[in-house]
Figure 1 (cartoon, rainbow, N blue to C red):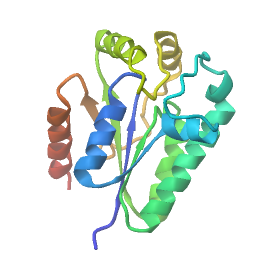
Figure 2 (cartoon, rainbow, N blue to C red):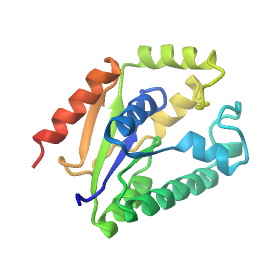
Figure 3 (cartoon, rainbow, N blue to C red):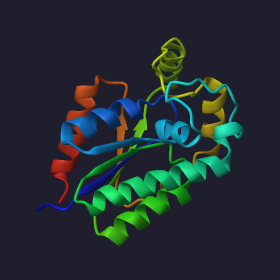
Figure 4 (cartoon, one colour):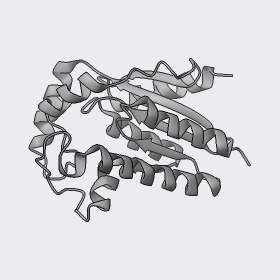
Length: 188
């Protein structure tokens, strides 16, 4: 039986990571965990409940984020131990949070792929505006939160070239998934 794989799709808000991560999980039949859904679940909220807090308030404090990321790791560990591959979808803007995922993969002996999602700011603005009108949207990301994230984002310099995959997500989702597949096939 092949070893399960662990993928994290990370980057700033509105870079398309959730769209791509969920589509990748579906394509590869992997378990999928979204930090926005888990965060709201831990707070006892519906995934579609709008939270208008700014960064660092309410369910977006560093303590609540640590709790959310801890829950993501627990779920990933459970599934990986059962032989099921996993996709984690979160900003992972801090090296320390990415290190936790790396340690989990190392401890379980599973292959980790870190997929950094990027796109032009104009596209991010368009996506945030579109999301603000969507009652089914789960993310509470807004422009002012993006600016705060951008300021704090720690580049993934700790990741080895074979671990980091950077995807431009301003292309159609299927094209992005095909690029990711091609990248993985080219790796040893």
